[in-house]
Image (cartoon, rainbow, N blue to C red):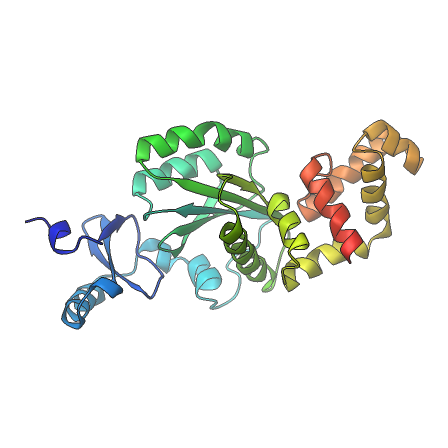
Length: 282
């Protein structure tokens, strides 16, 4: 009989799970995952002994895993810009699917197994500008080829973050993604602004993210005036420049600077709506 016959709830994946409700055992180049709820005490003990003989996976050895998932140590490296891509999956991700996603996203610094059903990619620069459309085009094919439904959340772009701020942003993005999915399940691909718009309307408590955008949008009158003018002119750049009494090139410079520092591209409606609503609510 196959092992699956003895353990029908067993699943396979490319790396061990950080979830305490599961036992992961390395077999060859993959991991077998056993839910503790379906195991007897004897089975848990035997599987636990097998797990102890194995070295942690390279993902669990990663300093980023210790910093972001385990909350240990300092930020391993500072980037000019970085971003998290969160992926919800029904079953653990296969190694070849991880490699495919890394090739699509580009610039992946670390793969972070958060739980049995969620993995995050740390990208060491802001992701390619066409990533959303590229994923939207490829996602149906990927899901069909691998027989796995995916839900992807493209996190915000972070600029020159140091200290523990990046870990705080990671935790809150992950938390708001979870909260959003508890009430919505239709969309397969989500942007940061789309989820944050919902969080503002739901009055979610996100202190680190609120502090970050308060410093960028509220404490800087020039940026606040830019957001308000863009909203009042329905995103029309010519009319916004006229309202602010600046040249079109100067407006573009300001927009680029806001995008670099905040991750928000105000020419995109969701980003502009989030910035405007954030100002109104604070």
